Image (cartoon, rainbow, N blue to C red; front, side, top):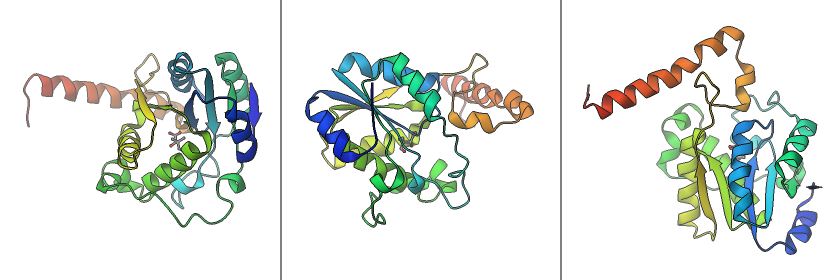
Amino acid sequence: MDVIHSVAALRERLQREPNNVFVPTMGNLHAGHIQLINIAKPRAECTVVSIFVNRLQFGPREDFERYPRTFEADCAKLRAAGVDVVFVPDEKEIYPEPQTYVVEPSDLQHILDGAVRPGHFRGVATVVLKLFNMVSPHSAIFGKKDYQQCLVLTNMVRQFALPIEIILAETVRAEDGLALSSRNSYLSPEERREAPRLYQVLKSARDQLAAGARD
Ligand code: PAF
């Protein structure tokens, strides 16, 4: 597995790999990420994973500074999963100058998660477009856990006519139903016990809708 830090070295390495599939991440990898890699691997000769905590998608009062960074453990998991190339740029590599050109997603960015995280999806779409330009994959895999992100990125790829297939993977859950997430480590034991109720409530709403409830 090659661990690469610069865009120039990445491009040189991937020149030999016209057929590559891409899994962008912010690190602190868990079984959900490994599932994305398992879906990616059979689709291409070269599987590329990026680890980059993207400041642009964090609000000023969000958790950019304390977002868990676990590079060594992540590399061990990626190696075991059979990843070929890991791209771990630092901030200057992705943003050598202030990012004044950005991807402005549709109004979809202002609802749901976007309503409480202004600018979040602009930051996500902008960094993913940059990463796509650096990696030039033929496919990229994202988890449905971040469903709004999946819609924003699918729309971006379609509207900019990028030659990249977006593949969406099912959410991986703990046994009690909580979706795996790097941020679950922020939960206190009490919050962790309570968190799976979200999934129970969503499932119950889905079942009631399917049974015809409309109130
Ligand atoms: O889902 C994530 O981890 C991030 O939003 C992504 C897609 C890697 C962009 O920073």
